[in-house]
Length: 342
Image (cartoon, rainbow, N blue to C red; front, side, top):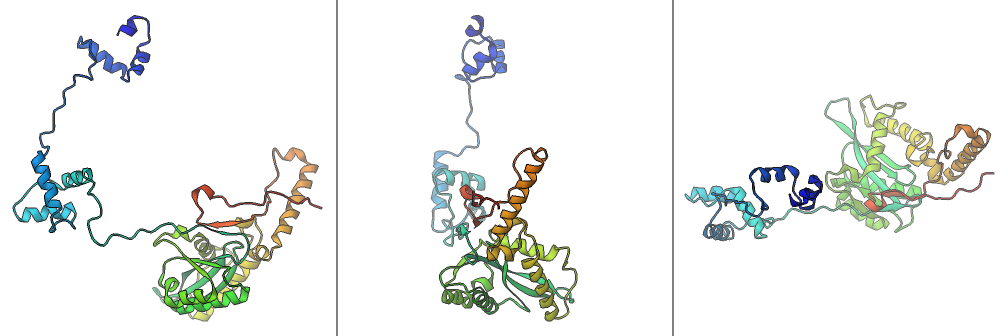
């Protein structure tokens, strides 16, 4: 109040001593000239445990009979013995204060870390694969589509349809895909989820023989395998070849998938790779296509500059593709230079 009497703004003076103007008004009504924060009376809670009760609680929680149990189990067991010390929440609070609130069972839950970031700068460096359902005419039954995609080019490099999930089928598919693509040893990383066919002994043995490094998603985290998930969505919702029918026999399912893969690899202009086909990018001719597109846009802007308020469309070649990138490197790297169009 002395500062206000000397001409200071009340709310500014209150800000200096970290109180609100309403608090100052309340103190003024009480005709108190002292700081009301220094003489506040706070009563201790009536239900606070005594020091002896606190020590008893800790002693019981650490006894061999209860040391592996949570407070939610300790309290009922004590009640069965006609003993009540405190509630479950009080047990938790005191154990936390004593740094004893850790997993109390001998079998601790396994921690699953995000898979290591992978980067593909050329075809046949990082592949992703998964299995999805193809419906049969008998409701509740399915065929199983095994499909491998190259994350750099988005090309489907291997696929097959079977009547069941099997690590043996998976290992045969990866062998054939490596043979078709002429993949040298110790060049390829194969990413998948945590299903049994992916982590089966037969599959892992095959990968070791081929010199292929396995990589796995976290359990129940589909975002760790986004390229295969995206491929399956395209497969099931592509309007030109919709997956609307059910298959009587496995031969029909294989014929349908063969048509889809032909369209996807050779006709589908993929938005993730600047609207070229996966086969064009896999063969490396997408660079020529993108340079031509850039030249077309450059000439169009020279003819009609009034139609552009800034730069032309970005047709730069995507130089690298990342799988599960770190947060600080989430954006894929690009080739930053254009070659002059002829």
